[in-house]
Image (cartoon, rainbow, N blue to C red; front, side, top):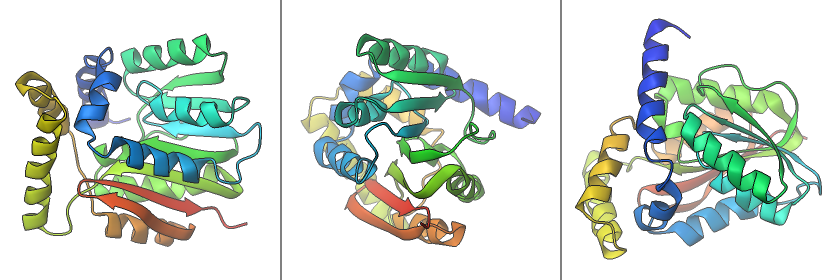
Length: 235
């Protein structure tokens, strides 16, 4: 990493590491469409997945998405990548308690991906921290580590299709979060983490997946700021 990348790595690690202990409990409030959002992502992530798959989780945080996959495929071998050590510690503790095989890798998403071939690459609420060029580069690199026919599922925070709609989606997100119990302190902390966000529209990202070489790239779920993006490595 260059000096700028190191600085960004350390800043994001600090911001998200500080939230590790309360991150999962807050997520249902801060992701108002939580069940449909994660449910759709899980359905695609485990579609046709082998009984003992190798799964790479990028920006894994506390391991929520990995744990959901392990609930469907208990023999999965999981590799979790994140820049925030406290988040990864939470993930490792939870997965170890369930006896789920896993490896932890602390690194930035701009760094080379772990070597190997994976049946699925998954990510939730992480890739939007990269700028658009970084997203496009990551999508190309993800395709390179997928087995033929392997799936990539990105449960993501996205930008609205226009500036006006983006502002509207943001205001509705806060209204919905408050309706689910978020208070001023929780929203302020979320806003502080959102300072690192570089979201792109779902349509742009589907285009970038196709550009990278993914087959059947699509956005099967979208609700305001949240979308599930999928694509497969050509068989």
